[in-house]
Image (cartoon, rainbow, N blue to C red; front, side, top):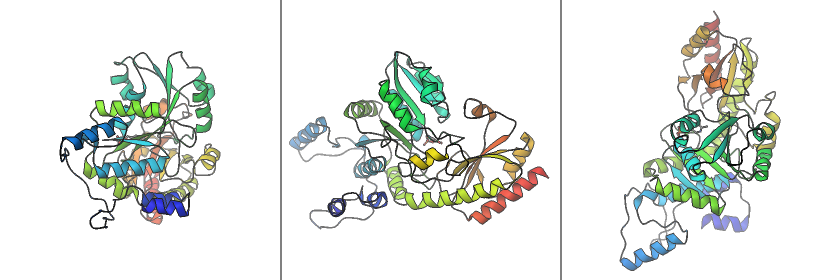
Length: 404
Ligand SMILES: Cc1ncc(COP(=O)(O)O)c(C=O)c1O
């Protein structure tokens, strides 16, 4: 109601406003009041007043409405979070999943049949290759990895290619992809363009606006924002895709706990302000790193000098705390650098409040054609919300110790 009212005053409110006014509790018709923070509605099923009420619910459901007849689909907390994901991504429907990886799996299994072929950007999140190796192959779905440019991809097109799956900026080295060009390519060849938009989380990057058909987000990262939940979501707007995703989501029994949906809703309200601070901090760390002789390259598209900077300026409205850095350190020195950091936890995730570091495996880089080889050690940093002066002092002492 409140959002509707705001929109009649101002038909295009800013995303910061929309994020706070979508997915909110409805007023109780008896009391005229509503909780500001929607509670976590935990239930495994719903009960109906009588059989006519159940019949009505079944009919509404068959007509495509989000009507709950059993708890797996999730109640008000889940519906609110779905609404927020749709607001973020500019989508008509969102399907929740218990992790980012399970959301990726939903997109692959929902959109591909046995005997079909999918092109995958070689910079995509590593476990996609595991999904391919362990499940897709068994299901008779063929996968080809390629640099995600129309020229490179066109070399691998087959008569049965149906989907183009990409991640922009790519995992590990943050290669910015030209999504508009990829959307044109997908259109020309009748492919469904799916993007992993965990980096942008719908706020700083909106793939559906740029021509993608499906967006996948690991809500575990910036949406949740506090490293305390696992969650994923798949968003789409076209009826044919919504139907396939919906059928697969239901058939595979996907379900998210009400508490995790609640945590994600709570986290997402501060997404804009957190992202701005992560982005500011990351840029300051980039500035510091450029002054260090050990650094040969910084991978962060918001940093001028990154080859993806122009695309980032064209397509993104902000940035975040993710960056990688190539260092002239031998493997032993690189380990000493990472071990020497006091404020960066050694860990795989990102998107929470805290700084994290990951020493990137050379084998993980070798599969990215964006990586130009070389003996450098690559370290991925998530720049958290700590004081940058402290983070920079920490990086500085750890580099000194590693090269001493
Ligand atoms: C880009 C990207 N997509 C998807 C995922 C998977 O998310 P989750 O850990 O929630 O399964 C991750 C996790 O690191 C990621 O970095």
